Length: 189
Image 1 (cartoon, rainbow, N blue to C red):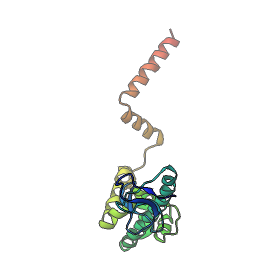
Image 2 (spheres, one colour):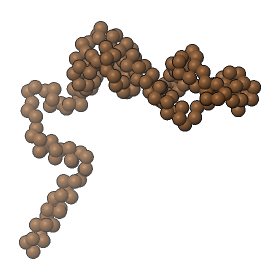
Image 3 (cartoon, rainbow, N blue to C red):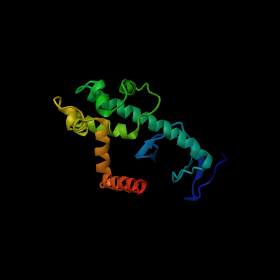
């Protein structure tokens, strides 16, 4: 790129430059570090950065890599603390993750970054590890009372489905009965 006069301050020259301490907002992160060697058109007087369409694609790819590394690092750090309170397999089970997934994240060997939602949850659990027990209770209650009562028999699937329909669509059974009655009357009339 050929240097040009800065349109923002008109005092400096815009040149490709790297540097330390540079960061940009990216996704939910207010400031994501840009590698020192990644050059951006920057004014040497006011520090304004000018990013065009082509460079924006390159910068997005760079920030995506940085973001993935930050997510992997944060998740791994949270897991190091959480494994002092519970086994990885237990954490995976409570969070509904496939077996072995957290091991890959903890070692930072997983190339794909964990989701921001998982990282946020792991960070919250790192701050409040007793919440794992609360999550176990949540899943137990969501499973229904019959799931926790060993003495009771689960209801047949058909009855469960009818029960769910009645909850989701109140009056649905009554409408169905009226339709059947009308069909029956028209056939025998």
